[in-house]
Length: 201
Image (cartoon, rainbow, N blue to C red):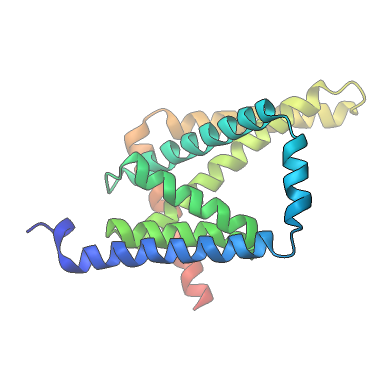
């Protein structure tokens, strides 16, 4: 019997799934508490179903891409399937929508760590790494947009271009050698997560 088939592992996975289901029910309760269902039905009847379908499809694709990106980082130590990464990512973003201080990121890291049987500090390190990459991308995009604004001051446009170049170079340095860079970035993220846990404790 392999480690993935032990009773303890099966119980951990069952408890994780039960926790996600209960949390989803609780968040749905708070989301729809006090809703006038008749008015909601009338609004939905007036909605453009094509637009709603396109929005749902784009959100699903974005969530799938986030799941694949996180799976690449987690894949340094474990080999999770796409479905596992997708439900963990979705649970985290739902948690971020309703819990303070982006607690959904902590929640998804803990759930995935328990489910996969890998150290939670490692999974949290991959989450921290994700956020660092998000910040780099946001800086690049924001700098590009600001530099194209006709009403922006010259110094602001110049600073935005410089920051975008620096962020782009940093991103390229992270991805030039994916295997080794991913391990190093995840290790640094893990150290940050461990230090954060010590500070909280």
